[in-house]
Image 1 (cartoon, rainbow, N blue to C red):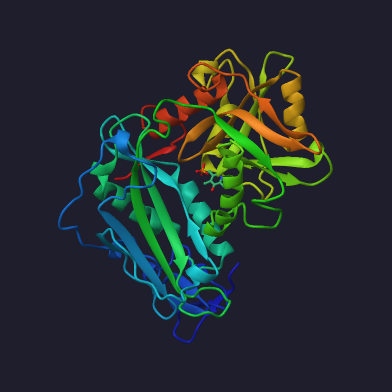
Image 2 (image 1 turned 135 degrees about the horizontal axis):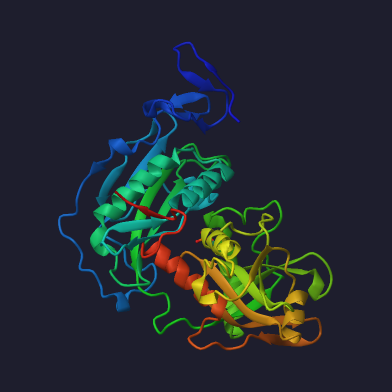
Length: 424
Ligand SMILES: *Cc1c(COP(=O)(O)O)cnc(C)c1O
């Protein structure tokens, strides 16, 4: 934690540590390298509206992440002045010094969130405090200038309200929100960025799968590693993703849609720990002798991104009991949620025993996507497949129940633990 003490002019000074003063004057809540600087302050926002508004494509024509709304929000951090007044302005290119650290050393952080319309036609966010807390940790991990994420959340709500006409009024559709912070220190020295640019852009999303939920195929990969103990896989940093593109392309060449990231800790299939599927958290459903089901996802050991969809699934599963079902579609089934190590050998064994009922990936963009096939290479034996049973409509019962429940809470059609948050 920061060590604070009074300075000559009465301002609190933090010695060589960066941080936020909780509850202090928002005019001077940002400490950076011992200076007291302006904090990010949503009340200082200025708004310049676009002169003409873009036509909004039909939801069926939307490709994920390709269409941006009319406006964006930007704020900058300067080491002498702190955070600038946030500016809403027409969506458009940024101008950056080519030496900016974001292009060289990648101190880049992002979040992925969605806004939904509730039955009253008002915009809602889903558990946004969790995104804010994760972003705070990501910013800290790459030593970017900190800011009060409660102020960022106010700015996100403002943008969602301003761009409300872009939120598709259709079940399963949403406005995707991408808050981003990049290091903009205009120098090539290898050190933490003392300049930053924070921006928010928004993109309308149609249904992730146009023709209903379709199971995906995964290829288990361990010669390329997404995340490792002590690495950065547990943070939403831009630098985690580019190294996955080439393995993803190799998997596609072999006929698989996504990579199942395995982490090799020992010999044989026993030594291959299952971590994540593409950029999604991974779950399996395994039948038990007592008629219940085990729902298993790997624990947060630093190689797993702490997804809030993952957390929401675990909470709903743990709250579920036949007497008081949080997943009504599975009312008669006892469900046992586990965060525990899952190896490729476990998957093969569950499958051989006929107990592997479902596998699915979860994340904000897709919510839940079922897995139909998992390829893996056993030494000297070539490529083999674990084939999951097919379910009518694409999802197995647990994936379907979780998808339905989460989406109805997100869209404000059902309340659950205050997860759905209004923007005004
Ligand atoms: C964003 C992300 C997830 C999903 O997190 P959510 O908070 O549920 O959207 C999972 N894995 C990786 C690698 C991610 O980047």
